[in-house]
Structure formats: C-alpha cells, structure tokens
Image (cartoon, rainbow, N blue to C red; front, side, top):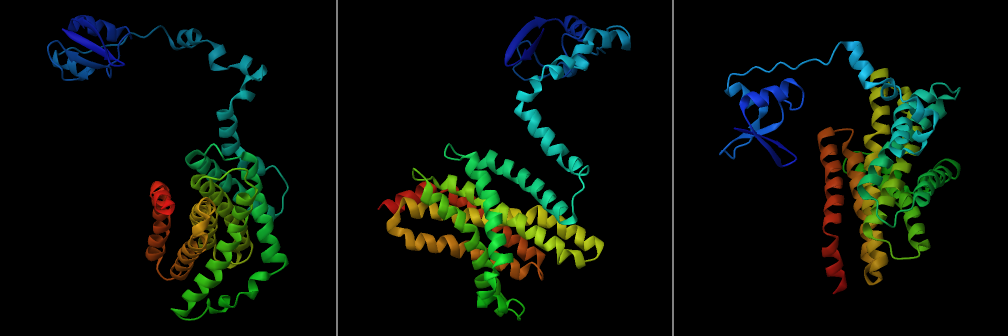
Length: 343
C-alpha cells in the first residue's frame, strides 16, 4: 500500500492502481512525496509507480480552446482589476514595474548626456538602496531621512568639490602621482581621508538631530545611503571626464563599474564610519577613539584600494572584501563592543 504525503500529512493508504488512477486524472502528480506501507523512507509517486512497472498517462481535459475557456478570460486578462485600480495598492507590483521599466521610460525623454549619466546612476543607486533597506533597516529608519541623506549628500559634495574646490587645500593630494609607497600617502591621507570625511558629515548631522540614541545598525544603514550618494556623484564625474576619453570597451566597463561596484564600496566604507559614530554617541567617554576609528578605518581601506586598483586588481579585490568582512563582523559583534565599553 502507498501513502501520498502532502504538507507533512499522510493520505491513504492506496493501492498502486488507485495511485495510477489519481495521477491519470490529475489529482496526484508524479513529484508528490510518497512512501510505501511499513517503510519510513520517502520517495516520489513517480518512483513508486516505476517500481511497480506502471506507466501513467494523464488524461487531457478537452481541447486547447476548451481548456482556455475553462480557465476563463477574467483570469487571463484581469481587466476588472485594472479598471478598478486595485493594482495601485500593490506595492510589490509598483516597485517591480518602476525598477524594471525606468530605463526604458527615460528613453522617451529628451535629456542631455550629463542628465543621462545621472539618471542611470540614480537608477542603480535606487536598486542598491532597496537592497540595503531590505537587509539593514531598523525601526528607527525613516524614509524621509533616507531620501534627505541621499540627495543632500550629493548637493554637499557638489558644493565642496565643484563650486568651492576645497579639496585642493589637502596637500596630500599631490602625492597621488608619485611612486609607491609615497602615492599610498596621497590615496590614504588625501583621497581617502577627504572623501570619507565628507560622507561622514550627514551622519554627524543625523546623530545630532536624533530624538533618541540611534542603534549602530541604524547608523550603518544611513552610512550606506550616504556612501551610495557619494558614489553617484563621483560616478557621473568620471563618466563625463576620464571615462569619456577611453576607448569604447574600456569606457563601457568603467562606466558599469562606476554605477555598480564602486558605489557599493563607498557605501561599505561609510557604513563602517556610521557604526563607530553610533558607538561614540552611545558611549561618549570613548568618543575620541571611536571617532578616530570611524575615519581611520574607512580612509585606510579607501586609500589601499585606490593605490592598488591600477596595478593589482586581485589585491584591490581582496581589500574590497576585507571592507565587507569588517562591516559584517562589526555588526555581529555589536554586543561585544557594548560589554567592553560599559566596563
């Protein structure tokens, strides 16, 4: 005798001929879980029937047209749902449509090349944002604050970099084009320190305006959003300047990297900063060391990556992974940090 198992519940027992009949009539499928009487081993209905030398033949329910008629036009073309605008309340549908069709929609608009780069960068950053929101959001996370961080960070960086040109006052930038290891000073204390400090500004502002102590995971999330925002700004800058002078293949690859992986790295480095800023706010007695770690670790990772990305892609990839590894390890060991700093 044979038992058919569905959702952990046994149905039967049935003879092999009964099971064959059920399969032929569509009540049981060959991939249903089954077991034979007095045997706890689970198999499939198809395996059991083959063991008995039985070959199922599913009976078709009429012709193609009669089957379509049975399904019904209201299920195939749900016009009532569309006309009734019930779909407007389906957040999953709206999100899927916007994410999937946004680039196609932009083809309809007469926009400038610079706007094209920015819109595409914005599109990828939104995908990253949804991903980060799904993984790192906390009850303290605010959508309004998220949007503000994303766009105000870009505005702040644009003013500091393009309008005021304040970055040129960092003397370590002049070491960038020198031989190794002097270029490491330029990339760590010039590029890394300056860019990571700029990305930290929104995090300090959020912490100052918060009405309650923010959890490290909350600040990690806002750090990710600030980093992505900086990555959008930097990606567009490179696409209209340096990348525009490359050959087609190199420019294509570099543009894709500037829209995907590189903003992700900026996000990870800034998220590490957010982690330590949160602890500095929770345990102010240790704020000097925690603020130091908030800028030193991201700046070092950033500088090391920039130093080696032109000469050793493998080494740059390892450094990138170390950043991700540190961020996730910090989050997992948050309780250890709390116990240590409470003493």
